[in-house]
Length: 152
Image (cartoon, rainbow, N blue to C red; front, top):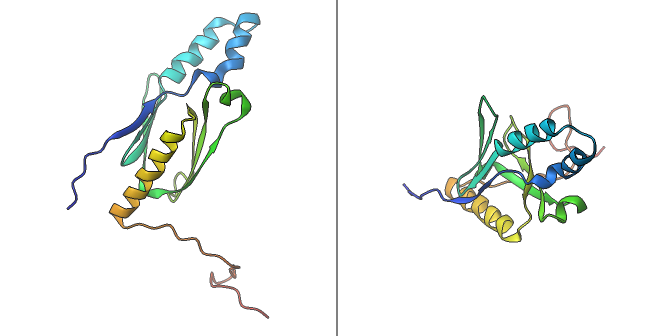
C-alpha cells in the first residue's frame, strides 16, 4: 500500500477584501460592532487545502468541519472580479462528484497561479492513487429509460 504523507498546499482565511465595502461604510455609516463581528466571523472561517483533501472549518462558538476528498473534484473555475483582483484574491468554484456538495465555493483565496497549479496537480495525483477518472458522456439521453436516444 502506498503510504504518502499529506502535505498542506495552502491554509488561510478568506481575504478582508470580501468586506471592503462594509469596512469602508463603517467609516461613514455602519456601526463598528457589526464590522467587528464580520471580522471575527471571517477569522474563524479556515480553509485548508492539503495534498489529499479540502477542509473548511467554520463557526465562532460551535465549529463545523466539512471535508472533501480531492479525487472527487471534477472541475474548478477561478473567478476574479475586479474588486477582488485589486487585492490579488478571487473565488475558487469546485464542481464535485460528491452528492451532498455538488458545488463548493471558496471565496477570498489568493489569486496565485502557482496555488491553482499545485491544486490541480494534487487532484490528479489523488485520482491516480485512487484509480479514479472523470468521464463525461456526450450526446442526447432518452429520459424515459436513461439510454442513449435513438433517431426516429
